[in-house]
Length: 186
Image 1 (tube, rainbow, N blue to C red):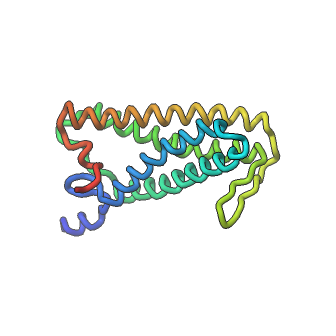
Image 2: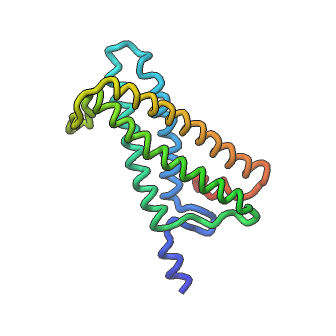
Image 3: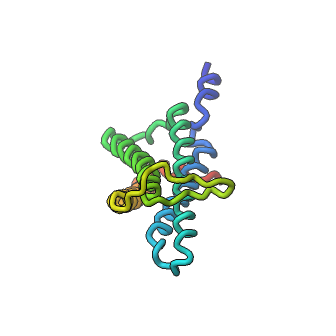
């Protein structure tokens, strides 16, 4: 019976997450700062490069949204490893709340980004095809939503730094296996 249980929960291993879950985590961890930096610097290069910068920012954001869908489906269908032994209820609740808010921000950011783009009247160029705005151009609304998009992006980065800091604290101060559960395999 235990073999059946083990087979039905592929995202869990004795030591933590599977390699696939780890790849998703670290790929997203690498792409989030890329999207953030592209968003912050979109107005820095000469105007001739602005469209390319905006499109790159959108493609990274849409890639993150797609990876998030895969990650949520995996998490809902497979669960997550049990908390480290000795972790208190408060720590488990804080970790769960942090993950929930990270996921919510990763849902909200692409949605607000799409509204900014569409209300501005810009298409999304996806290489083989282009998605044109289904909304009527409204630059004032686009500008307002862009402000929220920016605040959410700063919140995501702040929370991601807090998340990484907590993992590092677990690793160095508490010397438990929290970080090793998500660290790439050797």
